[in-house]
Amino acid sequence: MTVIENPEGADTTSGTPAALRIHRPGTRPPMQPCAAEGGCPFQLKGSVPGRSNGVEGRTLQHHGPAPLVELPGGVQARVIVAYDLALRLTAGRDVSRSADHWPGFRDGSLAVDGVLRQWASPRNALNAEGEEHARLRAPIQAGLTPRRVREMTPVIEAIVEEALEDLEAIAEASGVVDLVPAFALRIPQQVITRLMGVPSALMGQFGQAATGLFDTSAGPADMQRSMETVLELLGEMVAARRAHLGDDLVSDLIRAAEQAANPLSDEDLLAQLMLVVIAATETTVHAIGTLIVHLLTHPAQRALVVSGEVSLDDALEESLRLQPPAASVPLRFAVRDFEDAESGQVFRKGEPILIHAAAAGTDPDVHTAPGVYNPAARPAASTSRSDTDRTCAPAPRWPGAK
Ligand code: HEM
View 1 (cartoon, rainbow, N blue to C red):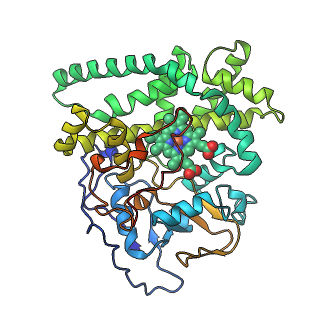
View 2: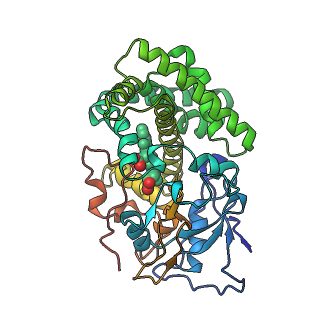
View 3: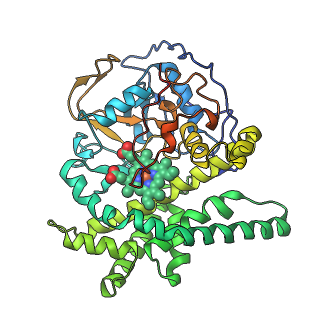
């Protein structure tokens, strides 16, 4: 069994700049032979402080388009590292995000504990498919509109300006600024609490519990406690908002959930709110953190961004390509036995599958210099975002693909 360690990269949670590596540009790494019977699973050990998912992804590329990995709890999964295969699987109908396709998971006969159970269990938009997905997602879509995001812009600008002013004060007082709590985490946390309309009396408590959800050193019991606290606080907010509906995301979700043809239960509503808290915070913290690291460690690219020759959007997209905050979320499942004709990769019904965005984003069949941070070379398509919800849509086809 091979354990992936990361001697050279870092994530922003450790506060250490990532060491970016140029990985033999333009050549797919040679396949490593595997002697183990039934495959050669890597261990993906979950969150390891100091480990970069970019380096993890490029290590996995040595083992074909879909190597076998072992996840926490001993669960085996196929991890997709080839860009084209990732696009085919996410766009096709052979793979689902619903754990209903995971034999034994729902009835409890499959022993899956800890982090995987917590991610795969909730009935939320991230883990659903088809009509159930549409039903669970509808209230989020009704509340998280471009209008609301536009209206939030001055609020977000004020939050950022205040955080920047405080950075100077922190630097003067202690000489050292940890950008994660002082900036990268503070901004999305304040934005999401304002967006949701968290009452100011609950802000501190909510922020503390929400931070606990992302504590990579927390054990299962601590994690469970944080989940319960956030759910409890969200429950209190829903009850309070029901009494006095306002102009905030929670009120919009309540209205949409109640007006739906098949109204959402309180449990379903809380699961969608929890999804928004998790999906919006942890991702953005690392998007901001890794962008800062990339710009600080690439002065020439930074100068292009400052001068306006390269857009900040491209700088961010390129940073997300190399080190996406959610490298392999969500867990997916093969809904039937099938073979991907182009790669020849076979999948078995019920087999868990992870799309490794960090590996797919640095696929040497697509990029001539996969590991290089180069926002100036991004295709024009990446900046042409529409006003609709594109935040979490799949990446566009890379025009330079070989
Ligand atoms: C840089 C920031 C972000 C990244 C990298 C990111 C990444 C992702 C990824 C990888 C998924 C799974 C997509 C799939 O199934 O293939 C997802 C889903 C989702 N994200 Fe984000 N996200 C970000 C920001 C946000 C924000 C700010 C919000 C809300 C305010 C949000 C809300 C959601 C929701 C609701 C889903 C489930 C969508 C559905 O399947 O219907 N995300 N995101």
